[in-house]
Length: 175
Ligand code: PNS
Figure 1 (tube, rainbow, N blue to C red):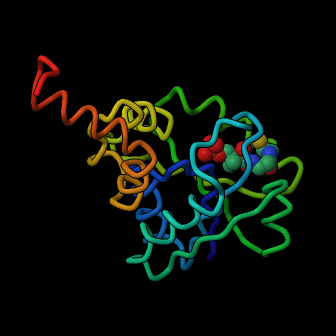
Figure 2: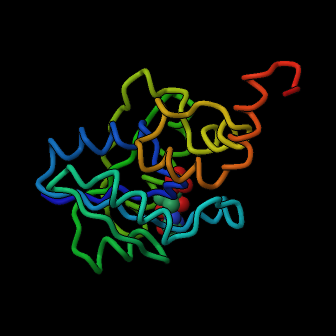
């Protein structure tokens, strides 16, 4: 059976990768699809093309995974592409209420089933939003994201990383 793992992926995190890897062991094929989240409108750090590029690099080692994008309703995408199941990751109970609502709505408007996959506990506190915040101050995010995301974040926040490195070498900020 085929599945779709939809999300904003701005950028893809180690938590997403964990869910995706688990899903790829269960389903014949998984498409990671970058979708538009109306709640995050205007808050994206990476363009759609950048997010796709990062995802392509991060998933290159998974033969049964492909990367796609769609702008519109997820249920329309599922119907058009004749995909079977929606996969969503759950980190903690706090994710559940929101995810339950979306899953019920997608079943009501499109008769599509959602399967939840629990991310490993070590990723419970990792989100794209937090990773971007840490990176924006030049902090170390290398454990929390795949290498492709870390490199893209370093490029985006090159100035902050350079400044922080200088600051760490010389706590007084001199020389
Ligand atoms: O990674 P995210 O931001 O939690 O993913 C949410 C996403 C993009 C899967 C969700 O917003 C979505 O499905 N957007 C497409 C539009 C849609 O179908 N909306 C109805 C369900 S909320």
